[in-house]
Amino acid sequence: MKLARAIHFDESDIQVFHQPARTGEWAISGGFEFSNWGDADLTGKARQAFANGWLGVETFGRVTFVAVTQIEQGEFDALADTLAQHFVAVYGAPSLEQARVVALDELGQMSNMCDDQDANTLMSVQRELTDAGVKETYHIIDSPEAGLEQFAVHGEPDE
Image (cartoon, rainbow, N blue to C red; front, side):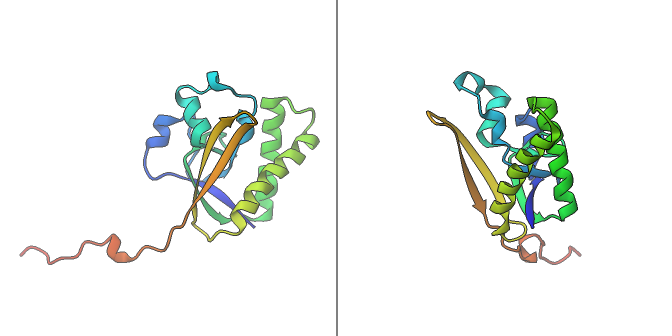
């Protein structure tokens, strides 16, 4: 089974999100957070989170890019519990049991998206408000293995 982890290429997420996700934490789309948003909500850092932020399932911060990787069943189950607790505490879900069903659905959707991808494939998300609600578009960014020559500096030492 696969899921995605938050990845940072630079410090920009610290600048653009109210709360950035931690590098390496498991992430999902998190579009549910915006289900009742309107144009008036799309300002500043909140707009950036809406426009292209994945949701970290440990800190509940946002991140611009995620990378696909393997997840063990025990980790997946623990994430479902954490997300269910979040649904109860933040969104007022009536019980942990009912919230866990929704949490498993959210995690399952993300896992399904990741399962057909190679390890280390990068993904981004874009959202827009439409008359029908929030529209999400996912972008897959293949990450072929880089050759050493892309990073090594070749030359002769100065004598």
